[in-house]
Amino acid sequence: MIACSFLPAATKMIYDMNLQHLLHGVTFECPHDALKEKPKVVRCVLEGKQYSSQEIDRIFSASKAQGKSLYYVDEDLLQSIQPDVIFTQDVCEVCQIDTACTSAAVAKLSKQPNLVALTPASLEDVFSTAVTIASALGQEEQAYIYLASLRKRIDYIIDELRRAKAMPKRIMLMEWMEPIYNCGHWIPHQIAYAGGIDMLSNPNGDSIVTPWSKVVKYDPEVLIIAPCGFDVKRSQEEIHLLASKPEWNSLQAVRNNRVFIVDFDLFTQPSASTLVDGIEVLAALFHPDIFTVPTRLQNKVSSLPVTSLVS
Image (cartoon, rainbow, N blue to C red; front, side):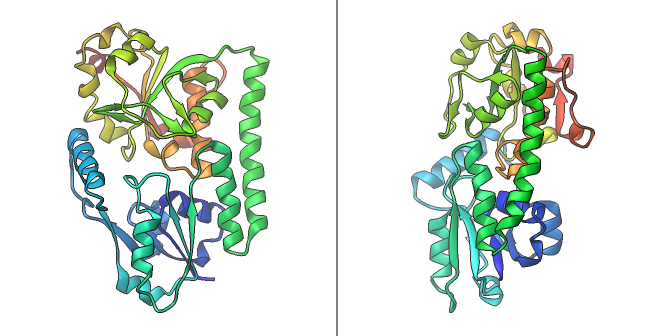
């Protein structure tokens, strides 16, 4: 079996299930281990360039409106690999190459691979994609072993919250800062498992632009900033976009120093293990009297210094 993964989340799950020996090609945004070991078949015209949040939103919006893709396939490399199966996605044509673009590229191949499109909308859907991936690779049992350990970690958080009689916290998680996007798909489910509720979110659906006035009126107890594609350091460079807004200092989360920046891959890279990591981090941020951020994940979260909270 020769496989290629055209989305980072699938690559991560393949590695998590110890099936990486079947993987022969990846995308430029895949996890570090994969980029060291596997050829990059999918690239992006913006790769290696630095743009502001506003510029990124403008570029991707214009590309979408024109029906163009910013991603491309190294067709010669793909031809040399001759994969039996390619994992792609149809959740977001902005974040990763989609099935339509992949289909156009593979149409020219002498050997036609099986295209497996992963389109999760909920957290349970993400878990199901692990089974889909493992089954396509002829290793279905590996998925059940993998998922059993992840469900135990979620169950532990649920049990501890119940034992402490913890009330859910009023949360907002931002997927983008300029313009502001709420969170969607599986992220509201992560928040719920962690002991929070995000009434501005869009469970099982796309994130959407959310007016600042709506955020102010909602007044979250805890504000999580995790722009898609941004790690903590990158988000910190643009936190001024929020801190300069009117009524920023009046937000309860700001006044109580409960604003946190978190790496995007705990939320918008939907591999089962990274999303469970995200649940564990959120539980510690929502309920620090019950949980702590796991040591191995502490570099993925930062609270804002007081000086950053003043516009």
